[in-house]
Image (cartoon, rainbow, N blue to C red; front, side, top):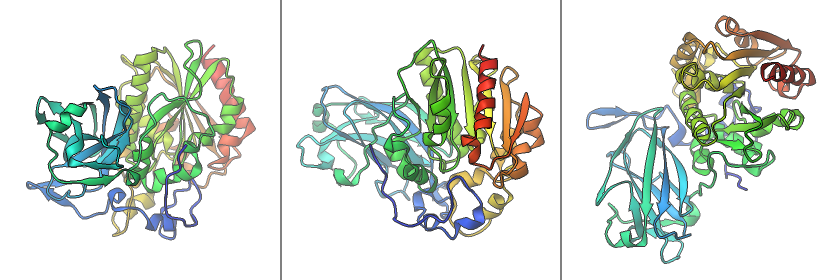
Length: 428
């Protein structure tokens, strides 16, 4: 279990409430680090403008040829002139998948193993790199990009042959260990899903990504006789937001899966990661049908994922899509916030009413083979009329309103009863 360290201050902003004018009074807002701040000055490399905040992901795996159990430090070594600090570092087990959250730029990836067990990683302990033969391979990433398939083979012998580009001495106590992985079986009350960690995912997504990445979690061993129901949370959310549903859904018919991601990242990046993680599980288990359920801005992530990757063609296993209190039209204040000289998170760029992200996902139609159900709260002061945007309403098989606010929709008996009826009808 892990709880991410953060500043000890009292939150003035309630979880899942995303009224931007309130942010400036929250010390969580004031503590947004530079690597997550989209308003940092632009940097240039070889005449090319690069984004300086973290906004892209590199995925891969470290494989130990020695079958050693020693922990391995993975370093994303920046090649751009303006990136001098080695901020891209995580600790993995000897053979482990990884997910790196980085800013735009060019990188080389090195693995270092603490062979002498002194608690420090130094330049003479390089155990592997990404590349072929004796040449490290450069990886170029851009905003909202997911670069996949990076495999690094490590061995003790490599430390005699590979030279790290500079002298380093990294204390393992100062580096975050990444221990979670896609398809991991967890408990709904796991400390990883705590509201504190979920809040870090909103205000400091880089810290969240180092610890947890963005993965789909199972609550039990995969069962081919049960239908997966995949839940996607909203701002400052986690699988715990779905506890009411979890305790009441028929576990003999359905298996509950949860996409847990830092809600402060670009929503288009979140949708790309959701696609990759789900396709990995589909390749592994081969399920024929699944239901996708989302709350608040999680509905935007899910819609992007469903429209962007053509789930009406080869990947037609998504049969039902359900959203609760999703602000389809975005927020005007989020647009205004991008023109002011203050801190801003990547996701704020995407939830504006005039954002490219909102316009793109709402202009694209949902696949016709997916049955869509829209739930909204009549007392919802966060999404308000945004949950009933004409573009979303026109595609819904059914529009269902309840006397709930933005968050109580997920704990209302009537809402769950109707949701359960939809599942029974769609998956007879």
